[in-house]
Length: 268
Image (cartoon, rainbow, N blue to C red; front, side):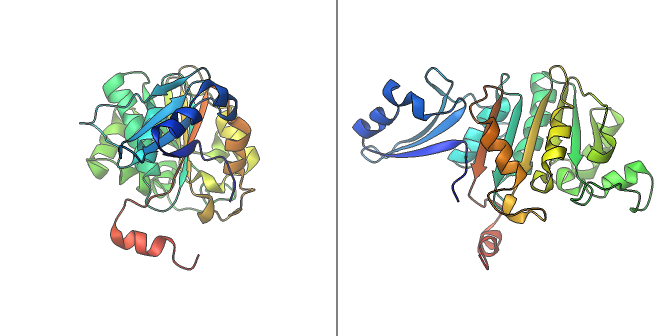
């Protein structure tokens, strides 16, 4: 499918690469679009970001904290780490690291960089924008039932999750209850965003307040709403491409396990 992936792959000799990255070609690039480069002469691989005026190197978090497993993940980490990019969408296949990268970078910005104060986890309860009253328990019980993917990304698992809740570093909400709210100094993690409607994407995006960021993650192929190129998450990326506040990266490699890779493309 032909949709905006947030990067272009450039493979060739030095002359070809220099030509593709030359000022004469700048018109073909969007702001915050990445170049994933492979030089067939030297075997060297590298990544750069187009900032609207030139190509610049990636600025990655400390590798002791998190390290990209491939070129796409390194581009994603650069986007998530960039102070000037306030909205990032990580798209991609099963096991490509979407939730892992957004969660770890949300914590990195709060605990290591101190640029924001808290994390808000946002998910649609069951993909249709309904109330969650049908789920058992109180509000925290209902939200906790679908935060398992987030908890799995924490080094300390449920213990760390509870600690973050008690420290008021972490909270969660569903879209149904977000109207009229504003979140300042917050990293908003919008997981499973492939099942959001256009109205819901607009709703959650307009909740972003001062010194806040929003990270979307999702796989349109797993959408219950629309698993084609007309998926609202893909359309959001297409409409926002070139905006200096936005970046997206489409992750194509399943890094979860060899067994996961075996099933990822099954029946396609």
